[in-house]
Length: 64
Image 1 (cartoon, rainbow, N blue to C red):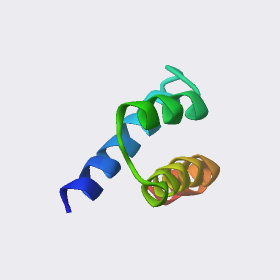
Image 2: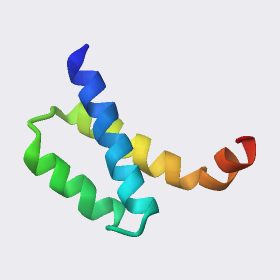
Image 3: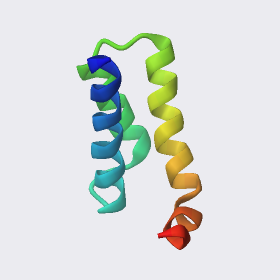
Image 4: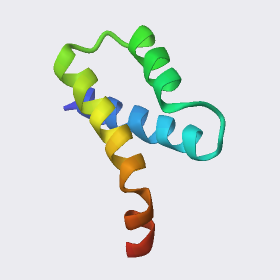
């Protein structure tokens, strides 16, 4: 369970950095993959969380 929480915390950190213009999603994901020893499923989940959130950003903002 802690592994998933860490993954989600990482997703939030990356998403925040990208929104503030402090990096590109692909660069931040690559850095994260180098720092963490996640398996392929976790890497896929993190990638989908980031790109999915960015893809639907305007819609998500309209809900808030």
